[in-house]
Image 1 (tube, helix red, strand yellow):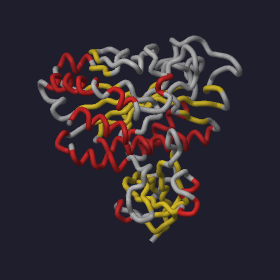
Image 2: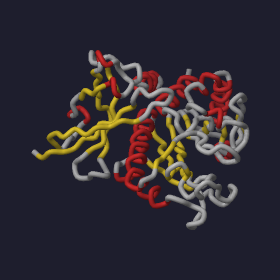
Image 3: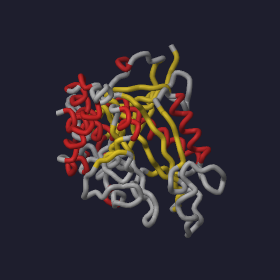
Image 4: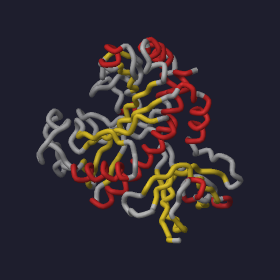
Length: 336
């Protein structure tokens, strides 16, 4: 029996936005099932998840994929954080989504998340002149050429790592602001899309180390006349995807209009800096939905409107949102 490395990944207790942590467990392998992975303790007092005089927390493996960086039989393991007595830790947001997904399993919810992020080299976005600004926005979205895109080698390697890990990456593109990129995960069910999003973020941070840059999910990394960074969340239920589903989608939008404040509260910190009514956003203080409207809170794609069924796009979540929270509240609001 050979030794393998299992990278245990979890969300810490950082406030106001949780961060990723990980540590490596060397164990006998290969690991064929998530049930073969043991609970593993850690010092919660060093991750803002416990006091020093009662610091033991537990990592419960819930999702595993091949480790595309180390290769071989090594694995990446997404974990839930538990208290030492086995109860759910207060920072464990996955547990609530697990309950919500089970309660509304008959709805067969699908999600596709568009993760935007910005690469930084020191204090500046990658490719920006020191102490200055690049050309105004316009040529950078889906651009080609060394004068219009920056960091493509990082982005390409990240995409390949995600694919090698078996993640459902559906595409990448350069974004409106130079140094800003996007990749998409899905369509998948709620737990799968959220687990894969967190693992893809871990891979993004990890590969950025190799290039000496940092990736930020801040919703407005550069002030001024520049696009922010979001995590547009595409959502549908079985009834939305069936003929006549447009009526279900419109009804869901009406339900979402009545819970706008509750959604904004879990859609990411500093989102008010991004949702200004400019740069393809709706003001954080407003709610509206419409067909093919990228200035709306909820966009109904033109194809969905034409077909009479499909999905909706919630454009409010910020890049630093917690997908466990976003998926849970979307299901609860629209399916209740």
